Image (cartoon, rainbow, N blue to C red; front, side, top):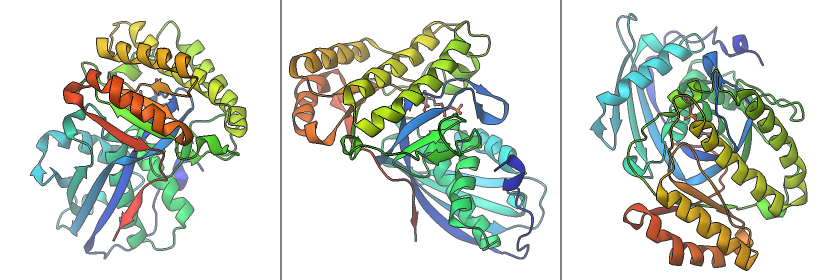
Length: 360
Ligand code: DP6
């Protein structure tokens, strides 16, 4: 599929409007997307676990309007009007308009809520942008009922990418690849695809307990961070490393090799933050408690031989990943020894999930 294949051409111009609801999860990258080109094209491929509990539910109400000069929309979070979200949505609509040309003909009310608190330091852009894209795709399907389920998901992911890169990995589950990779058939820079190869039982029902170390607004947004990969002294090597790490994961997933999995996942997390520390300007998003938690995890792993590991996204919070069969002991350790490092003792128990759901 190329960009032009996503342009909607023939559709019902007399459609008066309707209401669509989707709930879409967040995701956690194992190989990280960090660095992008124009039009939200990633500088390297990434792979993520789709999550289950952390999600956004969005209802989109559309009604035909008189003139089609401007975009017209209102946005609500938990029932409260959120005008500060408008610029991001406006940019999103501008980017996707060529593919969904009906946008200016309708007034939209976007009603959204997250299962996790807005001020948890957990980015809602992946779940939020994917939920909104799915609602728009339901509208497209109403205007053009011909489209297949496969096209529906692909285009939802394609649109979500234009809202926020990582959002394109939230449509389906449980393992999603985004970005061209020579060993992953049909992988694309334009949308996420399901990981196509065998995955060992060890990775089924994998857990992700998210320790909320710092719930404040990040000092440096992901968008700024991505841009600092332009002219970054280590960029090319980093992009090559992401390709290699994804190649290595293929046999790791097949064999169920948890030890090698841990090495790659933790190295990816620290490399991501290494890129932040070595860009110009440089910045640090980890907090002292992030490091306390990492050190405790390493000690516990050494002492017990259990397969606990961490990953980070662009913030101070720590995602603790562990297999189902060791969940009881690891959860006890988290509860007894790590929760003290969380802001107000807050954490979220999540696990691998299977993608977005339509709400009727
Ligand atoms: C560190 O998808 O939030 O979480 O495309 O600018 O919206 P934009 O960036 P975003 O970047 C996520 C970066 C990351 C790694 C990852 O999820 O792969």
